Image (cartoon, rainbow, N blue to C red; front, side, top):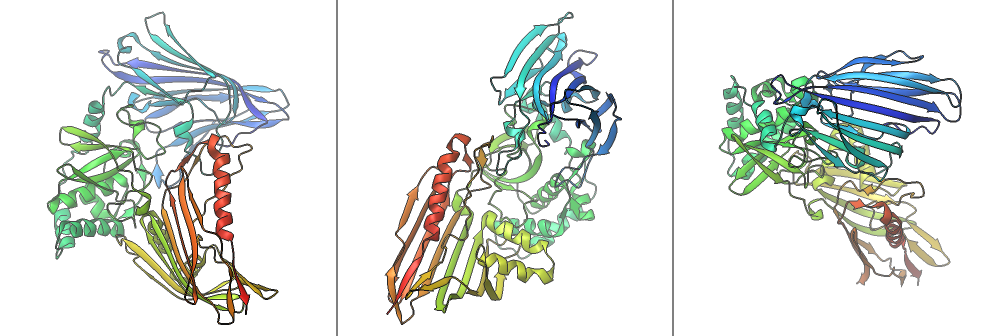
Length: 588
């Protein structure tokens, strides 16, 4: 969605979707859509943007508006290499305040199973809108509608047409455009919308279609088997075999997202992915499945919707409930999910985008529905160990950072995304972040392999200006929780809930040698808190001639509802304040 424009509003909108039955009346044939949108300039002259998306299975039959010519362009979403998605748009001039212009779109869903959802909001604030779904009489017991995230300004009616058709009518008033706000749940999950169920009545029906796309014979499968056997040669146990295969695919097969026609749902042949050395999520999963089977594992394909998909298979058995494919190794009641696209994330650690999501797992002619486990925060662990001495106004010592899970994946992804000459600079900034005015030397890194469990980063550092001398006292700023950034949010105009990227466990153990001509004046008070979203502790003590600081923060809950944002900000500020408290040494 684009940002709202407070000069342009939609005065009214009417959308009608007519579902057509097949000749025998047993299934959906196609869907005809007609839209009329009236745009209004509320303050000054301006231009309204009217747009409709289409692809190989959806065609634009008509697009018109006074003073505008329809333009047709490819639409490449973020992280997609190639897609058949296209956009038809009209740049409509509104020549004065109060001026209105109507845009008209007609389009046809050539395949009815691609008519899956209708989103109610528009890219501009909207005064009124009516959405009609017309279901022909032979299909009234087949087509169902699932409503999501409805607000009080939506009124539903069900009418009967002249030919016995059932007409679902949704009347919407005063609906704002979605806001793009920092750290928000995806709009596709929160905006008012309806899902249309018809072509596939049950999950079994949908699975039969999806599974059928995977059954093409692979004439060069022996090359895949031979490659798999070569990769695991010398492995001593099953875990090592799986890790070797996954690491090989992640290192040797380039991920290229392709969504084009049937290839948006049909996986490429495993041998073709191996030959070309690239594939999308479906192709990489097909290759991993074939390799795992070749060395003796019960491997299956898995269809799944990530956390930016607003429906699940069991509730909405349609193509809209999935946008990703992974594979799984099944052993009895145990299921190990493997995502070939999650490079640098160890096997057994699941990306936050699929945790808790409903997985459709192939099982021959049958299927299984399971939920991917939600990982404990400790799987994503960051540990800082630092030993310092004080020299004038600087802390000098050795810093080590250890990263696991998602934190490890993000560092390794950044490390391999820069060229060789910039790697040291990247690591130098990372090891001292968020501190500035730091001199870093002798940077070393290990565990950057795709399937390494832990990445370890070490360096010698000189943190200038970390100590300030005043009136015989030395104030030392160590920021023990420097590995975590718990943000505060401007909630005066915020419209959306807050969603943190992931949960993790952050630990620090810092030692500072007390200079012989100083003694401890005061240490920050112990900080210890537990709430819905995180637990945190910071404690200081003197042991011999050293000051020891241990801190630990565990984020436990990703979602912060808007009503709780004020409390969250208060707790976050208190944590930041505890993190900024200084050690005071007194000159003897």
